[in-house]
Image 1 (cartoon, rainbow, N blue to C red):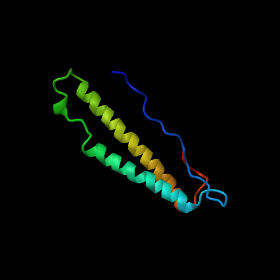
Image 2 (cartoon, helix red, strand yellow):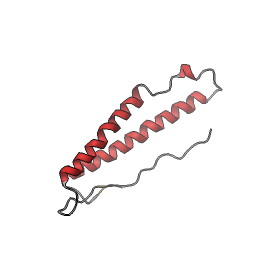
Image 3 (spheres, helix red, strand yellow):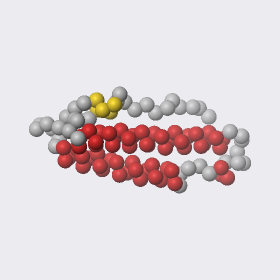
Image 4 (cartoon, rainbow, N blue to C red):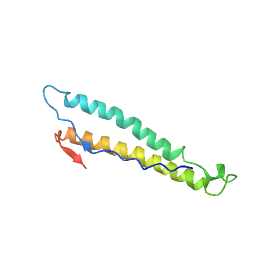
Length: 103
Protein backbone atom coordinates (compact mmCIF):
# COMPACT_ATOMS: atom_id res chain seq x y z
CA UNK A 1 0.00 0.00 0.00
CA UNK A 2 1.42 3.39 -0.96
CA UNK A 3 2.25 5.81 1.82
CA UNK A 4 1.14 9.40 1.50
CA UNK A 5 2.90 12.44 2.87
CA UNK A 6 1.55 13.80 6.14
CA UNK A 7 -0.92 16.64 5.90
CA UNK A 8 0.84 19.99 6.09
CA UNK A 9 -1.27 23.01 6.84
CA UNK A 10 -0.07 26.49 6.04
CA UNK A 11 0.39 29.28 8.55
CA UNK A 12 -2.58 30.58 10.51
CA UNK A 13 -3.25 34.20 9.64
CA UNK A 14 -6.23 36.05 11.09
CA UNK A 15 -8.12 38.45 8.79
CA UNK A 16 -8.03 42.18 9.37
CA UNK A 17 -11.34 43.55 10.61
CA UNK A 18 -11.86 46.97 8.98
CA UNK A 19 -14.64 49.19 7.62
CA UNK A 20 -14.50 47.91 4.04
CA UNK A 21 -14.24 44.23 4.96
CA UNK A 22 -16.37 41.62 6.59
CA UNK A 23 -17.45 42.66 10.08
CA UNK A 24 -16.18 40.88 13.16
CA UNK A 25 -19.62 39.32 13.79
CA UNK A 26 -19.76 37.95 10.25
CA UNK A 27 -16.26 36.48 10.51
CA UNK A 28 -17.05 34.89 13.85
CA UNK A 29 -20.33 33.49 12.52
CA UNK A 30 -18.51 31.83 9.62
CA UNK A 31 -15.80 30.43 11.86
CA UNK A 32 -18.38 29.02 14.29
CA UNK A 33 -20.21 27.47 11.36
CA UNK A 34 -17.00 25.64 10.44
CA UNK A 35 -16.07 24.64 13.98
CA UNK A 36 -19.30 22.75 14.73
CA UNK A 37 -19.12 20.26 11.86
CA UNK A 38 -15.39 19.78 12.42
CA UNK A 39 -16.04 18.90 16.07
CA UNK A 40 -18.79 16.51 14.97
CA UNK A 41 -16.52 14.90 12.41
CA UNK A 42 -13.76 14.50 14.97
CA UNK A 43 -16.15 12.92 17.47
CA UNK A 44 -17.52 10.58 14.80
CA UNK A 45 -14.04 9.53 13.75
CA UNK A 46 -13.02 8.87 17.33
CA UNK A 47 -16.22 6.95 18.18
CA UNK A 48 -17.54 4.89 15.35
CA UNK A 49 -15.19 5.21 12.41
CA UNK A 50 -12.14 3.67 14.04
CA UNK A 51 -11.12 0.39 12.46
CA UNK A 52 -11.83 -2.69 14.53
CA UNK A 53 -9.19 -5.40 14.49
CA UNK A 54 -11.81 -8.16 14.16
CA UNK A 55 -12.57 -6.83 10.67
CA UNK A 56 -8.95 -7.23 9.57
CA UNK A 57 -7.61 -10.47 11.08
CA UNK A 58 -8.38 -12.60 7.98
CA UNK A 59 -6.28 -10.22 5.87
CA UNK A 60 -2.50 -10.42 5.44
CA UNK A 61 -0.26 -9.43 8.32
CA UNK A 62 0.26 -5.70 8.62
CA UNK A 63 -3.05 -4.64 7.09
CA UNK A 64 -4.60 -3.96 10.51
CA UNK A 65 -1.72 -1.70 11.54
CA UNK A 66 -1.88 0.12 8.19
CA UNK A 67 -5.61 0.73 8.68
CA UNK A 68 -5.03 1.89 12.25
CA UNK A 69 -2.21 4.25 11.20
CA UNK A 70 -4.38 5.71 8.44
CA UNK A 71 -7.23 6.28 10.90
CA UNK A 72 -4.94 8.04 13.38
CA UNK A 73 -3.67 10.26 10.56
CA UNK A 74 -7.24 11.18 9.58
CA UNK A 75 -8.12 12.07 13.18
CA UNK A 76 -4.97 14.17 13.48
CA UNK A 77 -5.72 15.97 10.20
CA UNK A 78 -9.26 16.94 11.25
CA UNK A 79 -7.99 17.97 14.69
CA UNK A 80 -5.30 20.15 13.08
CA UNK A 81 -7.84 21.92 10.85
CA UNK A 82 -10.15 22.48 13.84
CA UNK A 83 -7.27 23.89 15.89
CA UNK A 84 -6.41 26.37 13.14
CA UNK A 85 -10.01 27.53 12.80
CA UNK A 86 -10.21 27.95 16.58
CA UNK A 87 -7.01 30.02 16.59
CA UNK A 88 -8.36 32.35 13.90
CA UNK A 89 -11.67 32.61 15.80
CA UNK A 90 -9.78 33.47 18.98
CA UNK A 91 -7.66 36.09 17.20
CA UNK A 92 -10.68 37.73 15.55
CA UNK A 93 -12.54 37.74 18.86
CA UNK A 94 -9.55 39.23 20.67
CA UNK A 95 -8.93 41.91 18.02
CA UNK A 96 -5.60 40.43 16.99
CA UNK A 97 -6.72 40.37 13.37
CA UNK A 98 -4.23 40.82 10.60
CA UNK A 99 -1.35 39.15 12.38
CA UNK A 100 0.34 35.84 11.89
CA UNK A 101 -1.18 33.71 14.62
CA UNK A 102 1.29 30.84 14.37
CA UNK A 103 3.91 29.84 11.84
